[in-house]
Amino acid sequence: MSGAVIDSVGVGAPWDAVWGQDEAVHALRTAASDPSALAHAWLITGPPGSGRSTLARAFGAALIAEPGDTAAMNQVLAGTHPDMTALRTEGVIISIKEARALVERSYFSPSLGRYRVIVMEDADRMAERTSNVLLKALEEPPERTVWVLCAPSDADLLPTIRSRVRVLRLREPEVDDVADLLVQRTGVDRAVAVESARHAQRHIGMAQRLATDADARARRAETLAAVLRVRGVGDAVEVAGQIVRVATDDAKALTAVRDEQERAALLRTMGVAEGAAVPPAVRGQVNQLEDDQKRRATRSLRDGIDRVLTDLQALYRDVVLLQFGRDHDLINPELATELRAVAADWSAARTLAVLDRIAVTRRNLEQNVAPLLALESMLITVANGSEP
Image (tube, rainbow, N blue to C red; front, side, top):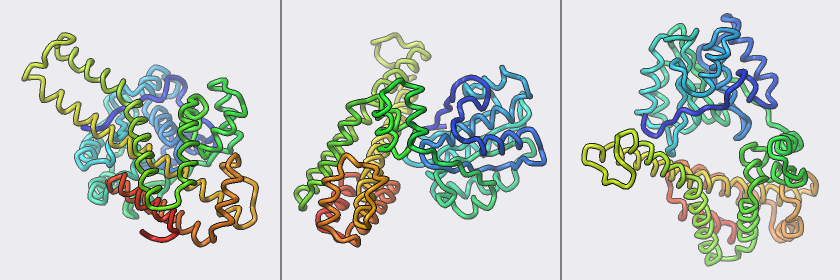
């Protein structure tokens, strides 16, 4: 499947990698052991970083392996079991081609395990036409096939999809809980862990990156400071360009090493010596890999910009709190002086208009709007307090 990858979540007992979701684990363990409690299509929802995909893989391992069959469970968790198919798109959207491939796979009987499990991460990245491809498969799956979709919210999917799945909502962890986990996993100073968990808004993956990467923390602080200095159209254009440049560099850093390793592995598999010219017979596969990598880079860039927009929503959310007399529970208390100045200069209506514009910009980016133009338009709203 182009643009799709099968991931592992670590090897061990199926539920060991799931953190802080005791109620959800209980519900899925019960379903895996009791056929009367098992729906054939599930939707796991929760905020980014809450562990949706980790829980889905653990559920898959519990469904596929016989109780006590540790080897089979580990195989599922490692992404190598033939009865487990997991799609994580590396493009901006899930394509119809990828969805059709999943549907086709769902009609195969289990080859070794008790069930065939189809996990679709990022189910919110389906366009309406793609969602329609899934409808019949979700409504009438084979008796021993279980679908597990993952998305931030059930509202992110079409009502026709929601009506065919059982929804399991994950809880959002507290800042202190995430900080404790970061200290346990990485050994970072607790003050850094707490700040990172707060800035990441309890997204475990982002919190871990902030806690362990001083450059990432510095980039975040510089971006927020730059946005707070926007006063006119010229500032808006300059800062929008800065955000795109930083996000582009960040995306390249995250994908460059992986891209080169994938290319080298493909050429080795094809028997091409290191440094040798790519023969014509292999060029098609190399070109396909490069196309997939470009799509992944595009998504990585857009995800990076979306994280910036999430930080900006937190920034102006703090301003609104201050405008309504609440000076506790700020996500960015280290910017309290600057935020109080904005809160005094702006009306609450203007701040809410900026928050609305940020939300619209996030939606526009999901629809493949050019990032630089979208950010310029949004920051002009920040500068003027009205639509550009």
